[in-house]
Image (spheres, rainbow, N blue to C red):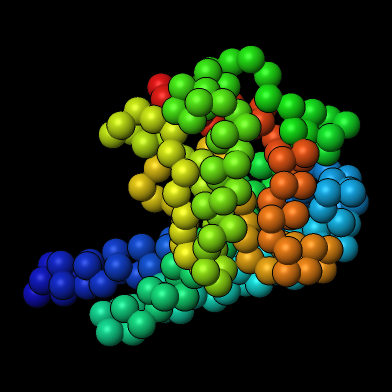
Length: 219
């Protein structure tokens, strides 16, 4: 009888252990540069608010959603939590990538060295300027909030420009460069003129980081 009781309780204990493990604690990543280091292209005020307020909100929301998910075994309640997990999880993933996308001009921002990424961009878009123009055009055309991406498509072996809505993470491609087009990323400085923000951001794009992502994606 004791053996039967132990056998019957084992799945519940395993489920509880799994639930506790799933409730991981996410934290706001530190930036590799001061908030004002990307000026004049992105103001220190924007960077401070974007990082400490907006990204922190996604981190808090993700932790809360994962904790709630771990505490319930109800399929209905877990399904209800999917939207919060997707939105806040995507916000955390996207912004963590975005901060690495950027680097001050004095540390190489905007400089694309000769290498595999440059060769691939010229192959797939014709030139670096054509790539930037296309990415800016596609990103500016997003209705509402979202992200513009340079992604590597493992099925075609090519670099492609794609967009995602809201805070949806890029899942169809390996993300190489992501540009946040939510108003909180530019409005204090550029108001409603999104093209000016998109033109300026190329001065602080971390192409060295993008090169590393591209090399990793194509292994």
